[in-house]
Each structure stands twice: as C-alpha cells, then as structure tokens.
Amino acid sequence: MTKLTDHLIVISFDCLAALDFPMLEKLPNFKKLLEKGSYCKNVQTIYPSVTYPCHATIVTGRYPVNHRVINNTFLQPGRVSPDWYWQRRHVKGTTLYDEAKKAGMKTAALLWPVTARAKIDYNMPEIFANRIWHNQIAVSLWNGSPLFQLQMNLRYGRIRKGLNQPELDDFVLESTVDTITSKKPHLLLVHFTDLDTQRHYHGVESEEALAAIHRHDERLGRIMKAIEESGISENTTLVALGDHSALNESKAVKLNVLLQENGLIKVSNKGKIKDWKAYCKSCDGSAYIYLKDKQDKATYSKVKEILHSLVMNKRNGIESVLSGEEAAQLGADREASFMLEAQQGFYFKEFFDGDYIDEITPEDVREKRYTYASHGYSPQKENYHTVFIASGKGIYPNREIPAMHLVDEGPTFAHLLGLDIGTTDGNVLKELLTM
View 1: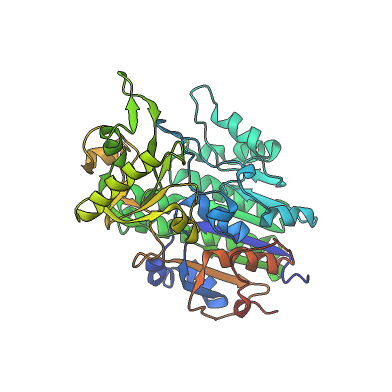
View 2: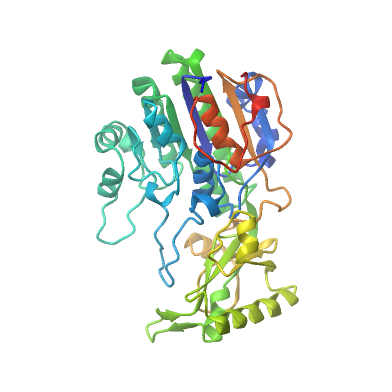
C-alpha cells in the first residue's frame, strides 16, 4: 500500500466539540490550520462517549464492543477509585501504532490513553498511581519508555504540578515540541486534557473552558512552529481532533442506592460492599448494569422491574433503558445486562449511600465529589458532536466533510501511512485524501 505522508501527527484535544467550531475559526492557529486543511464539524462519537474507549477507537477504527475498551474504568464494585484501562493489552486486535512499528516507522505517544506497556519507541503513557504504595514516577517509567520519560521530566518536569491542569498540558506541550524536533517520529499521538478538566469542574461554556481553548490554540501554534523548524513540514500531515463533547448537569443519579435497598448489594457495618448481585457501573452520562451471575434470572427480573418503574416516572433521571444486546448494536459492551442513558441535566455515579438523586452543590464540586459537566452520553444527543481538522501532505485543502464518525479516523490514518489495520467498523475518508 502506497503511503501518502512520511509523518503523521495526531493531536487530540479532549472534549473539543462541534459547538466550539465558530470560536476555532477565529483563533489564529486553528484558523491557519483550517485555511490550509480540510475539516468536519459534525463528527459522531461512540457509545459510551468517554475518553479511553474513544481513543482506542481512534487508533483501531472499531467500536468498543469490538476493541473491548468498553469504559474508562474497570468493574470493581465498591472501590472509591477503580483502575483504568491503562494497558495496551486491554485493546483487542491491532492498532495504528502497532502496525507503524511493524513497518519500521519511528513511533511516539504522549499521554495517549490505553498505551501503557505498548511497543512504542518514545512512550509517555497516561497512567497514574492508584494504590497508596505506588509512586507516580515509578508507575509511569515502568509502563512507558524509561529513558525518554526521564529526559522529558529532567528538562520540563519543573512545569508540572502533579496532575493539575493547565500545568500538565504545558508539560506535555514542551515534551511534544522536543519530540518533534529531536526525534522526528513518523507517527506521533498526543493527548491534551486541559479543556476536558475545565468543562468537568466549571461547565461547558464557562470562562475557564473558553480560556482552555485559547491555551490549546497557543499549544497548536507551538506544535506547528516545531514542525516547521524541524524541517519536515513538507512531508507532514497534522491532525487536530476532539473525542467527544460534553453536557452540563446539576443532578447525580445513584442507582446503586436502589439496588442496595432491594437487597442486590450488601454493605458491611463499615459501609463497604461485601457482596453484590447487580451493580450500576457509571460511564457518566450513561451507565451499565452488570449482574454478578448473568444466568441469575431472578435478579435479572428484579432489576428489570426496578428499571421499568423508574422509566415510568419522568423525574427519575433516566431517559432510556437498553438490553445488553441492544447496547452492543450501538457499539457498547454486550456483557452488561442493561445500559442506561441519563436525561439532560443528569449523570450517573456509583455511590450506594444517601438519596437516589443528589443535587450537585459548589461544595461537592470543590471537593471533587461531583462535576458540573459530563460526557459518556449517547452520540444521538442533540448538539453533542465533535470535530476533525487535517492539513498537510496527502490532504486536500479547503474541503468540508458534511458528516463522519470517530471510527473513520483509524482507517484514514492507516491509509495516510500506507498501513493495514485489518477489519474496521469505519471507512477511509477518501474525499479528504489526495490519493
């Protein structure tokens, strides 16, 4: 397969949404990218529309039901901080970076989700210490490229303030610029989370979120300048994309409270889950309900009855209920017995104490118990699309794609690099490419 470009740089601006497009058109660096490139401001995301499944989809071209990264975090009932799908081994099948590596290309990834322990030449995976005995630096080094990470931290680590934003993205930016100029990778994947963080804790159209978009424009400008200064601009394709949108919410649905009240979750005297028959696993704007024993017909019937009564009450926070098979048809996890979609203004939490629905207060948000905005919702929600902008080698200038899907990105990237990532759920965006 003939490749169309020598260098593909993919920048994921987490939570960059279609609603941001009018602003992007006016910002100097996004405007510059748009003037020379092609774009789509109507990109449909996946279900559930959370970060880790989205980024696994971007590099595989497949839905979560097929690549098997079906949520951000694992089903670990009762854990305050469940483990995430950090590791490459959680992705079923091949990926864009796997095939690039096999083809002898130089690969790099900076905080790209689900890349821990991946065979990437310069890898700084997104992973954090999730046990009291873990050390953040040690966890990162063990799961990525140790020497590369040590170099980046020695040069730019002073910028960071732990995992806080915007400092974390500022550190990632400096590491990205350094990687472009010193390594000149053939494939570079970069993940920025500043905007996503601001929207979660301040709201979708908050001043903090708008400021993050301005910072992203400056980051994009620095990356574009690094490409020029490295001498690879004529043979480089630069992509800026979002993975999902977000919606404001003011109420949290805690279905596990009802499951406990109905004897399906048992809690110890110390307030810990000691056993469960059914559990609501949050995807923020949506949620899975898993049965410990999928063949337990009595529990299945009881949960179905509870959900039916909730849906009949229009104020319960639940918009719709799907079976596991119906969820799988939309690309979600078929191992769940049910999948729930939240009503506008609601999202799901896994707490099993207190009331069924919590009103979110500023104190809750300050303590990071709840947020003001979420994603994870159905891609069919109104005003919930994301964006895609591509410019450079192999890309037609000034073309607008009316509509596309997140699953189309993986096969398109593979085509640009002359790679085969196998069977995908998406299509190559041929109208975007010069060949």
